[in-house]
Image 1: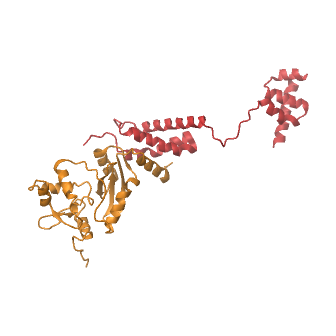
Image 2: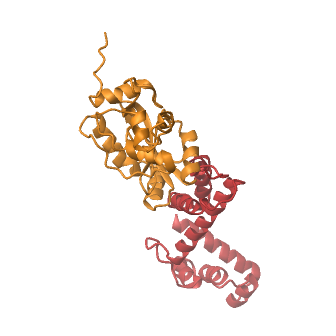
Image 3: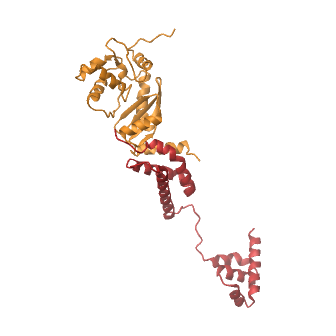
Length: 190
Length: 150
């Protein structure tokens, strides 16, 4: 005997509506692939490329609490803004964020959040803005661990020479996002 | 990072949802679906305070049984209006009506035996016949009633 999709969905929605979850998450389909999107009652807390729901749920539980449940509705506002971003009609996200990071990480991510759509900055610039001008490499580590890529635009951060350097979601995606934003010329497939 | 010893609720839920529904269907039949949601909401309320992951299946089945017991109590406290009204007349009155068509002696034997719960000896005495004759009158009355009710 298995639980019907309707009954399953009804429980998930009720759990979210009752405010009983530490984290709600769901999958979102985008041009850069399927993303796992997670929110707490304070705001968006995670976007993961190449989701592995079991591993991701475990990691969310470690940071935000064990009451982690997949539920579609709490994710809807994020899903909508991502759709608008990818169809080009949105250039800034208006979403509360729940960032559980402190110190230098937090300083860097706060500065990163202000890098405008379609513009590039460098690891060194962010390091200087966070008052540690020699910490470009450390900024790279913070970017690599960015819990909310796309919305916190680490794809807009490049090397001093203009090379893309790296991206936790893979360089292809970094190129794709920057091309969408008009910061890179589209590559012509021959 | 906190050290967490219970799995994320999602894994717990996926592992136990079928077992919980099965138990609730066994206990409640068609009311199982309401109780299903209630069981997991109760589990979710308590889940953040669990100290270890021993026997989560047994734990959630206990919750399911408590929810089922609450449903039973509610059902009893508030009988469903659709249920037909119970006949409050005593058994002999009902039986008297049913047995109206029977021959006089059979009718008396049936009503006294099945409506008043008298022994055949007592019925025989009341009708001025033997115990065996009373038994026979009652049983042939019942047979006739059965035939007429078909």
